[in-house]
Structures are given as C-alpha cells and as structure tokens.
Length: 293
Image 1 (tube, rainbow, N blue to C red):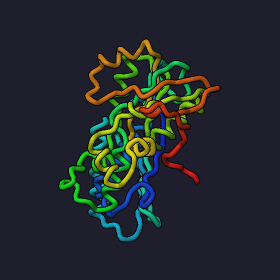
Image 2: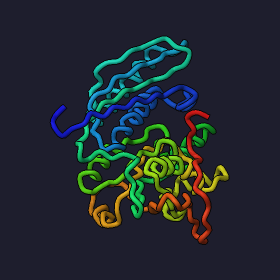
Image 3: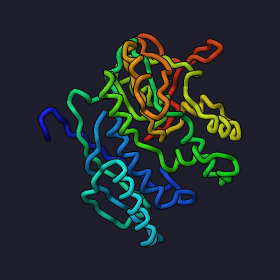
C-alpha cells in the first residue's frame, strides 16, 4: 500500500427472499445490485474500490444459463466502477445468495467515518429518497411500470447506483466531518451518525428530497411521502455532514445529482427530532431496516 494510503475492506451478502425475489429480479439485476451495494460501502468512507472476490451459493433449480447471466452482469458492473474481480467460490446451498468482499484504498487525509459529526454541522443528502421502497412495492404487486410511469423508482430498487464519483468529488473539495450511505433508511442511518458521533440530529421534513414519481407511488399505496423517505433502505445515497462554512462550496460542485441540506447536528443533550412544516416536532425514531430483530 502506497505511503499515505489506507486499505479499506467490506463484505456484503445478497440473499434470496431477504434482499431480492426472483418474481421480479432478473439474474442480471441480481449481479448488478449485489456488487453496487457492496461498492457503496467503500464510497461511503471516501474510498475507491479496486478488487473484489465473490462467493455464489446456488440452490436446486437454478440453470447454468442463469448463472452465466448473473456473472455477465457482475463483470459489466465491475467494469463500470473500475473494479477487478480476482477470485471467488461457488457452492450448492438451500438458498440462492451472493456475497462480495471488496477491497479499496483511501487517502489517510480523506477517510470519512460516521463518528465525526460536529455540533453545528449541516446535514446533506445526495439524490432523492423513497424510490427504492416504493419501487419494491410496485414490483411486488406486479403493476405495469410503463403504464404508471414508475420506471425510475423500479430502477432505483433493481439497479441502484454506488456514489463513488460523487464521494470523491465531495472529499476532494470539502472537509467532510461524517458520512454514511443510506442502506438501512434515512431515519436509521441518521441515528447511526448521531450515536457514533455522540451528538443529536434535527431535520426538517419539508427539505427531504422526494421525487414526484415517489410521491405518486406513495399516494397509490396510501403511504405518507415523508414516512416513506424516512424508512426507505437500499437507496445508497450519501448522507454526510459539513460545517456551515463548507456549504457554499457544494453549490459549485458539478455532481449531476441533487445535494440537499435537510437539517443540522445538535448537542447530545438535545433530542433527535424531525420538524414538520407546521412547526410540530416529533422524535426521530429508526423506521428503516433491522438486521437482527
């Protein structure tokens, strides 16, 4: 490892009927999403992914052509993010699953952890939220995606983007105090930052970026858009905090996607809250994915 660099490593599992369903996932989708999700972990700490190994668990009924389709998608996704697949294993199992281990590198001066948020920091998020959750509902219910105009949220669930380029632009141009990718949901991942930084968070409901497509889908399923955005996991957007003096620099970056301030970091003695447009304050509780109930 070159001087001034750290190695970064992550592992991520993608399991049938936990993370995906063959009712609406193609094997190509499985390959793309499983690798992108693992790469997102490296992006979230400011790293650049370099190599990957995978373990593929195959159950009865899976065809060789389907395995080939999955592998082809993995190779295409790896090429997109400049990642080399350097090895792996394949095993017969009771469930279909794919597990990636990704190794990357990061400048020691650029490492961004979830534990560095400072009182007074402004909380930012990339992209729009809620699409992954509503996209899953659309797919589970077998709605006609094109007829309803739900192409973007379906894609958000099936083939999310890892924000590697965006992460690099942010850390090279700003002093990022803390960062995490939204894999468990906005509310849950905000509280991860709060807990590990020993601070509290205050966010404004009206500032949470939600696309019109997500709002339409939420309405169709009789869900509130804010509650949907708070719970929606597998978004893989970047959630980060910077000091107020850094905020003007964000406007000058050409990230190609929205970057929205949604709140601020407060002292540990204060409560984690979400403020609604009428001024009502409610406790911010984790409503996203629970790994172990």
